[in-house]
Image (cartoon, rainbow over all chains, first blue to last red):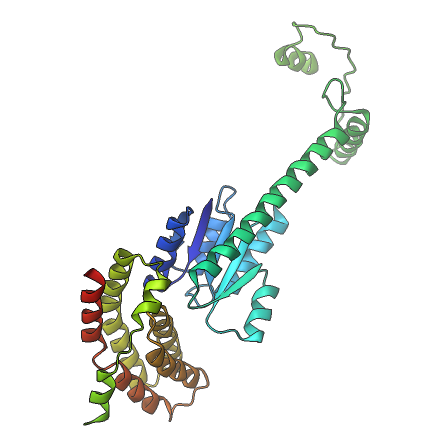
Length: 198
Length: 124
């Protein structure tokens, strides 16, 4: 599994990098919060992150907030974030968790504790993946005909309503082509397209 | 015997703890010790300059970095000394900062040679 480490301190970064590589992770390491946000906000970015609290440009809680904001706007997969804090101060823990972190770890970290907490993260990401899969399956079933796998009546009526509203708004017109396609090899997308144009 | 000398006599690096922190990976530990030897003098100088010009923000930031490094390298007393410096700088207690810095400097006197010895033990 891929994991992002963000820590401005080289020694700590190297220690984390090597420890996690040995634990079987594919590690990506960056040295400030801005670079962490860039990586985590990519659609194909790592879904597991270990962030230091104090970093230049953007601190750990700042990264959490930026990542959560992006997730609300786009439907990206969940990013499980562990914050590294220097001391177990209640205020820091509350602030960190409220910024969107899922867990925290006190520095200097214990290797076994680090691995255990990341395994928890992996389990949650795995569950989230299964939930998304189930949701997508339900969404498909709710919008497609079970026999033909094409859009069902509800979706077609909904789309038609939206198209009609749009053409009214833009003072255009909407053409509805009602046809019956029964295993016709001649009904290629090109044929349909030219029929619509005409 | 002066205080600085007595401090340098005591072992400040907790080698067993350090080894457990790297899962007994001696090669990694040697890399970290080398990195520490390179980074530490540079950061100490930056901290010295920040304290000299009473730049509390920079003092707090460099102290924080040093604290992390020292804790990672299992050097608790020096980490405590620099943590105090960080706190004083955050609170902008300008009058107490030079004294805390002097205490920290004394604590880390002779640390690099001790690290050399430690490297020798690790590479054995």
